[in-house]
Image (cartoon, rainbow, N blue to C red; front, top):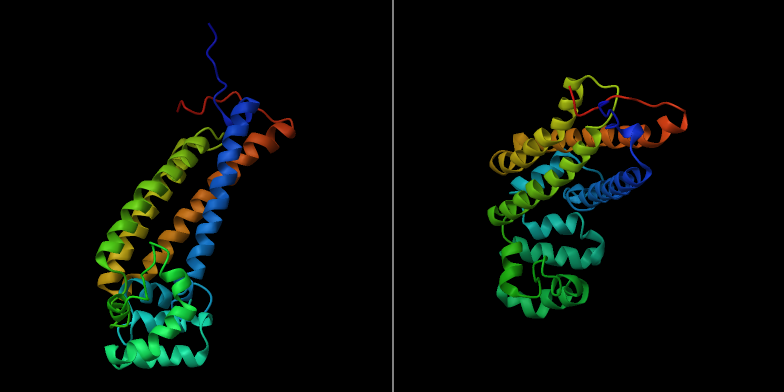
Length: 251
């Protein structure tokens, strides 16, 4: 009996190609949205658009010369209130967030400009509550340990599943030496570990902030190479009349 050699991307059935392509398109869009979300949150930590080392430091180590409230009012929340209102809240934070000024001065601004989101979304701190607002107005020590732990395990479990299926599809690509393909498949997992570890290292020492950028760029680039290669081999190669008898799951 002749051994089957169909297991490669150009030779997959139309149904399997459609399945893989749908997954790749949705995951690719998801990765782009994740990048946009990073630019709109961490990327505005220093008050300037675009992700920089300072953004990473402020997000994880904190801006220890000021408060989280001040960082946000200079950054991603800058346009939510008027400059005068922002300055009023910053001065309140710098003076120790006294309770005497809360109800007459600060709370009306919060209720008018911030509470529509921050008082109704479970993932956001309730800034209409004085105790929570007082904590935000304290010196900024960056990401809290419980928050960092929660986000770390979500990323490790969730993103590793994404990379698993990207790698599984790419494992059927033809024309690669086995060690090259194995390296490309492993790179996103390695850089994901580096990325998460660098959050904790930056929390301890801001000098590690560069590793956050390196980790995120590394796994994004490797994933992009695998995604585009898979699409090319499933659709463009057969369209150009190119095929393969290689069984890609055998070295």
